[in-house]
Amino acid sequence: MIAQNLIAGYESVLGLSYRMLALARQGEWPELIEEQSRYMMAMDHLVSLDDGTDLYGIEQERRVELVEIILQQNLEIQTHLMRRRDDLQRLIDMAERHRGEASGEGSRGDAPAPP
Image 1 (tube, rainbow, N blue to C red):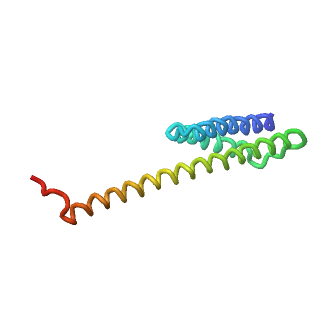
Image 2 (cartoon, one colour; image 1 turned 60 degrees about the vertical axis):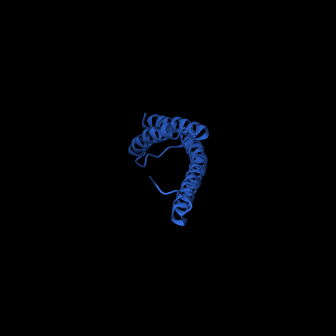
């Protein structure tokens, strides 16, 4: 029974991981953050279930399979998040350059004086 609950916990985490990956692929960042909160709670629950429980045979193989898939998906999610971070950094840099150019125009005296 404990083994079945443990495998069910891993499968639950995998389901959340699939949803997070789909959201990351679609660029649904607010929804991804919400799903990540659920994922973290499920992981905390899984840790409490997997308190050194030894699994054997098919159950151990299933746990290994589930963990491998979860880790692969986490890597892809991280890749999407890094791309998003880079996109946001480009936008920030562009806004700062624009702001610098705008303030530079006023200091050169090219811009008309305010009324």
